[in-house]
Image 1: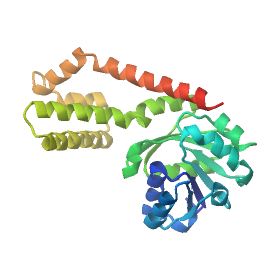
Image 2: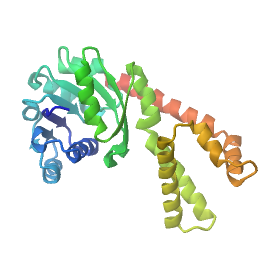
Image 3: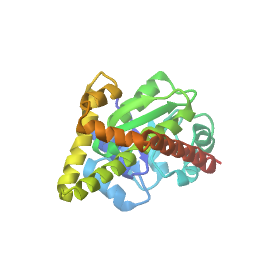
Image 4: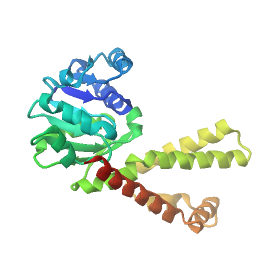
Length: 273
């Protein structure tokens, strides 16, 4: 990626993670700016990464080539409308706000804007994120490459061709970490009930999840085959898998993810007006 001026509107956890990932990859701190209404947030970002900071958004976007909107969905309309007269054109705008579609963001920013929507997730905080991206009409191939390079600093990136599919991305990866945390909680609790101390149960459960994920990433076989390789006929794993199937784990996951995607669509309608 060529050295561009990147401005982050909002300096919360997700912005911090992307900034940290860029700096770790050697991106020049002088070309990164962040704005946030909280002075302590800006002080911390400047101290940790030596980037430029600004107390107001208008100052922050002056001279920006890329603007990342990293604010809560509830304040996105207010932020965009106030930013409209100050945003350079052309500027690539990347939004990481859940639910709010490109049509709404473009309307609030005024005129035709080059917009990319991104649905990241919290493992981006440790550069292990999974981000789904959608490019609105008018975004060039070069701009898509820029957006991909920025988000790749905190993990893996996958593009979707239809904006509505970001609701499915939300259900799979955006909200997905919480599903695994819940499952790990349950494993930890079950281990304690069977006699392990809590620290040991947590250590074993978390490392098992990390190892299984790493094995899946490194393997070229299906997830079904990986599961079969661990499941010996008549063995202990087979009994556990049979219990999961008997209690409809797959159906539960499907219902939960559908509820997540439906809520994402509801929020889009609620906040996109």
